[in-house]
Length: 70
Image (cartoon, rainbow, N blue to C red; front, side, top):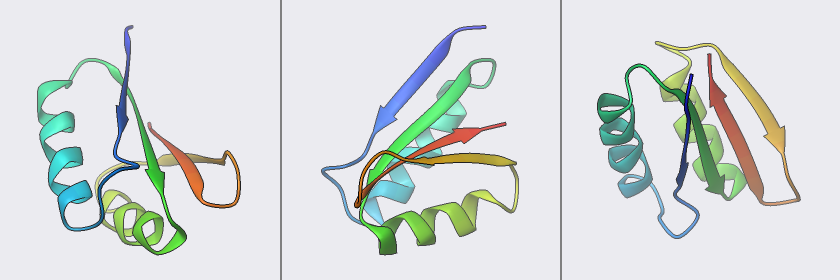
């Protein structure tokens, strides 16, 4: 299975959410990883994603989070 990575560290919600939504649609059969910056944006995005996916989250440093969709 191919791994696809989306880096939305340069975007704030809601644009990060919209980019993530499009990324998920385009990569249905791939392993998906999303990198986001900021605790607030991370919490908003992860709460939305938890409705449809199981998440594996790694905190890379204080403000960078890596979300893997399972």
